[in-house]
Length: 151
Image (cartoon, rainbow, N blue to C red; front, side):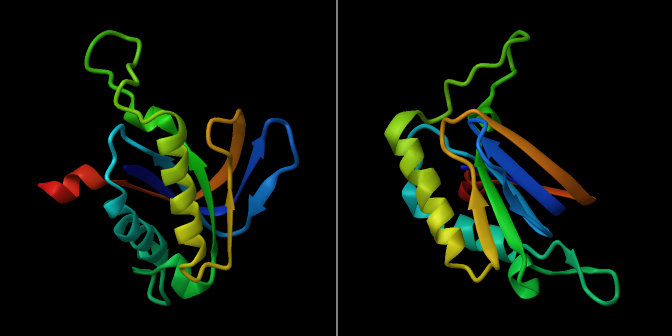
């Protein structure tokens, strides 16, 4: 799985033209699921995202997590995180998981993140048309690729 985590002062997602699902300060997590993903990585990825120390402490150091500060998260599925641009100008998405297995892992991530002690967890919908608005704070953006944990 791949997660792009952004520290934000606020964010929202509009799903299929509906009402915005918004958060104040916290995290925006774009989540990509790879084909053949091992669900065993989920607990570690969930904990890592929630407890990532990317918020300033009193001395201006990145020492606090969204959980420490009681902040929120917005999770959006994003198959394009597995776009392969090694050949040509049109990305290939063959490594991105499709259908029900990917949706289940995405939903398990959202559910698990909700149990981490964040103030609120909002989310998009797997496979839906979504528009995301955010104010990146810092900017602070971290990428976690669970394939790196195997090395």
